[in-house]
Length: 134
Image (tube, rainbow, N blue to C red; front, side):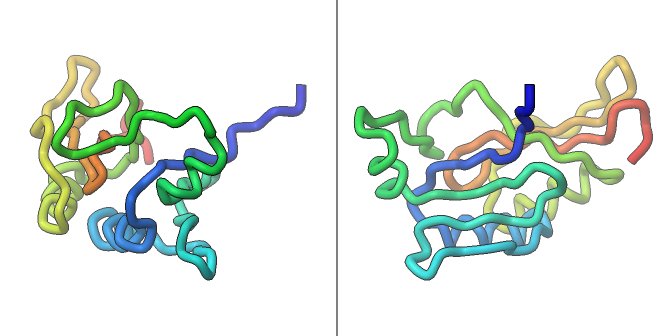
């Protein structure tokens, strides 16, 4: 079968503001944004992380969807990013508006892991690579 995982698209209230957050808090670069600023992508490796505003998302999903909000419990899904220095990444993200969910822990298998929420309420895991390599 010729299927490959290509995109994760988060539905957000404000695409430009969200992209600035991901640039400042996590160091990603902007890849693309529509002239209407209702859809944008960041450079995030082999899989594209994109953002669509709520109006665009509603036009695609006529029956609606649950909107992620920071003041509500997060969805049972996360974006996970590896880094060699989890605490440094957490500190930078929190400095730029992320909310700390779970402080840095070393898991029994040796991986360092912490959880934050972005300004839209989505869960982000910051962790060292499995097996210790980048």
